[in-house]
Image (cartoon, rainbow over all chains, first blue to last red; front, side, top):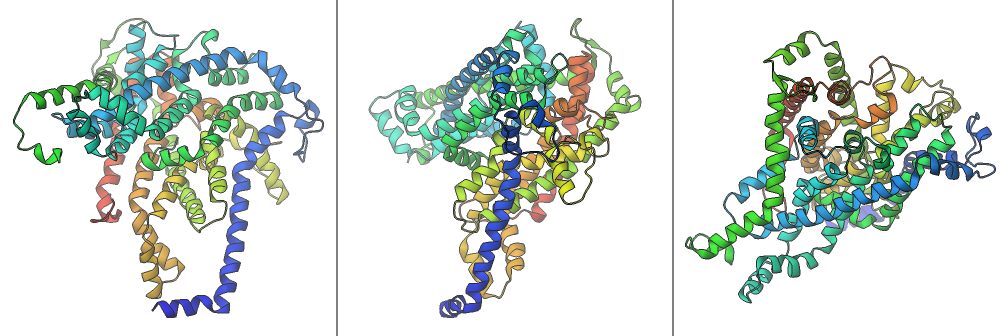
Length: 290
Length: 307
């Protein structure tokens, strides 16, 4: 059988067909890549164009001359540094909260035995299927009652109470660490907190990095949360500031709007390109799309 | 092994200690679950039967909200239709595109990580930014899409300005962001055992046969997952419609959650919004259950091995 296959594979016809198929494959891939990447190239191109060049038909891809002023002018309009600071504060606190809470809970589900654990794990997984819109109003009212509106609290405190997807991801990871390690430590008199902090967490750095990155991007990109909870301009995040530019009081041309938009996108793209491998692993592990 | 010993271990101090540790470690989520899920859902059910304007507390009005929604509210039907229309196209088109891309990348491609990154990048772009970007691309006069269409001799529609094309516009935009689903499919394709393809080839299966009778059955669990999560997600589409079209033109992109948002946070009809939320919950739950109940007919689970 193997010989027959080898014979088929070495025949000249087969080789030519295979080569042709590779050519077609790469042609299609390159074409599709262009479709996916052109919109982003287009924003960069638009953001650097002088006013006169934006509305042009057919459009130019290369701005002439490069008009960096679009970026400069957009900085004060979107209160860039304040928005950047707010977004970074919210995202950083969320990351800290998620790392602490999700790892603790995941440790409990993965490496401790307690009554009702398996039941609650199923519950945890099912909560991922509940539409966020269902609990949107009651949660808003809870935060309103607490007097937390127009503060960062509603956007950060919940991360200290665990996020099901990341708990699931960490739990899967923690389970791959041999139980013998914990047992040995227990015999040596190490407390659970000690095992968690000194043995499990150091071994789980890659998984924790995935949680950190996804949480950061989630908070950075979040629009609905800030929209509902933040009302005063000083508290606006990047997402809200960007949306505000589009609103009535400014009438910005597309070059400036795209410049502002890129200011929000670039940090994320840079983060993505440096941590690509973690992204792929994280998505594959959990099935979430980032 | 400790696991085996569990059954014979007496209800001792160690067991008690481990139980206590278990609950303490899980406490953050248990509290979060109690507040943000259990309490929130029961309140939503209650608010659904109430007149609640935030300024004054909830006031029980029985089925009034539901009666209004089903008999008086034209926008409810409209928003539900818009959402169903959008989901019916966006989800399957998204899954097929993602699967197609994943299959291309599964052909032992050189520079795989580059292609994969390019297809995935749109998914990390913040929705606010990608929304602005697509308003510009779909601009009927100077937008990139209509410029391209004009090159091949097609006069593009007004896209976002046209009630007929506004939903397809958002579906196109959604398809641009299928990178995450693609990565899940790619991982699942890489898990299909090679021997299966070789065996099929020996039996004389051509490319189509191998795809139809080997690839598809082996990745049905992933398709199932993508379908369920895709529908739950699509039914909650909000930001794009909020930023790009604000529900227009002529309410053609007034999606369900956008309508719910307006009731809750623009008109401050919290009770009415909660009733809408409960209806959404029932719809999404019903759709999920329908897909799950048909799954044993088309989702193939390996009885042995890794899964």
